[in-house]
Length: 81
Image (cartoon, rainbow, N blue to C red; front, side, top):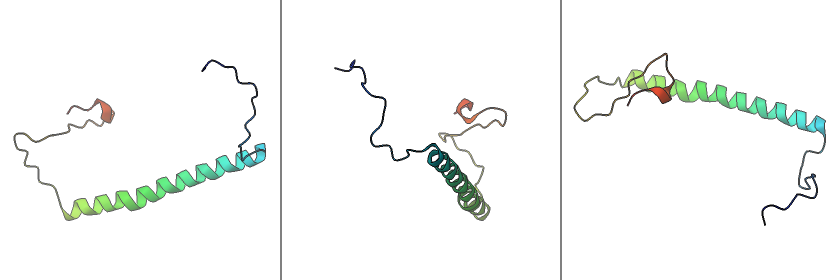
């Protein structure tokens, strides 16, 4: 059932038929992604920094607390928990 060969290589529901339109769409998508990244950095991360200044966290660590040990030279996936 799953091993049938595909008879045609065309896609009937493809909206972008022209290579020029495809390039324009790729450029537009890249611009939208960059704008979203900039907006995220400016708005969301800016709010996090402000909230941190308003409510400083205490450094009182108690037994049973979960602590992340960060290392600037390693990726977060390699941090110890």
